[in-house]
Length: 154
Ligand SMILES: Cc1cc2nc3c(=O)[nH]c(=O)nc-3n(C[C@H](O)[C@H](O)[C@H](O)COP(=O)(O)O)c2cc1C
Image (tube, rainbow, N blue to C red):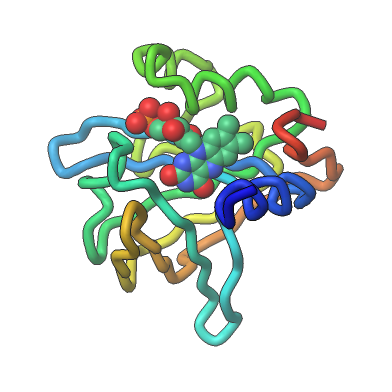
């Protein structure tokens, strides 16, 4: 097997938590994309990174100093994860009544919401590594995080 095939199969053994990254572009258009590549970086400053494919619709709206939210999904939000990772369901992404989009859009019933401002963008081949400093976070008391392993939700 190729290096890529082995790498893919090795990565399928990881258990990922599933989030939706959301933002509003300079024209006020709403964007949302399902992501599993969220990793916290540091507490000083509070910061995280997320890797975004350059072909995704949200990509070009991710500019320095702009704000986004990472919405960690609960097990009940598998459908929303599917909608936000399906190009053909792009028009349905903000149908859910739990979105609040007065400012930076966020899901009111997510497990947690982490609001960030983009501090650094690093291009790496097909992806951009987006580094955000954390402005504010909210979370629910009960923990029931949507996870993804071996290509399936758990
Ligand atoms: C569980 C899961 C995790 C994903 N994680 C990422 C990710 O971290 N970064 C990324 O760019 N795409 C990721 N994707 C793929 C995008 O969600 C998908 O390609 C999406 O349709 C791209 O957005 P667009 O349709 O608005 O262009 C993931 C998809 C799934 C199902």
